[in-house]
Length: 137
Image 1: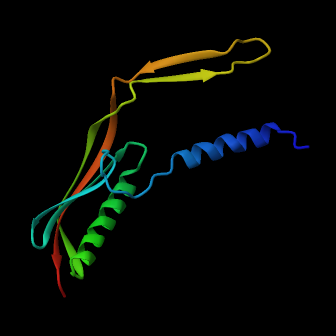
Image 2: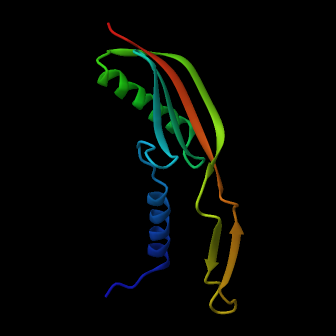
Image 3: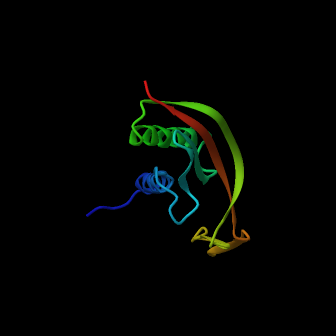
């Protein structure tokens, strides 16, 4: 019979935290996270990618550039030129306005404890925006 050890419990917690933080490349269809693009003329687009602050600026730029490359290929162009680039901190609306964190305490001498934090329905996020011009070579 498997008997959990402290080391195996710590490994499970770390694994849960790491896998819970993974972010995926996606369109921002009905939410705020993901990519959006806007065509300005036949070969010029704005592309933006928005995520929470747990995603690095480097990852946001990589996701936005991936979308730029997809658009370029989908419209039959071979390369794109970055005309403008911007990054900014934004505040995203959230349906979550209260977070409760509970602790089991030290079972031997401390009772379980819960703390509640009110976030006000706002989450800090990051957004990168590229203006690109597609080129046929």
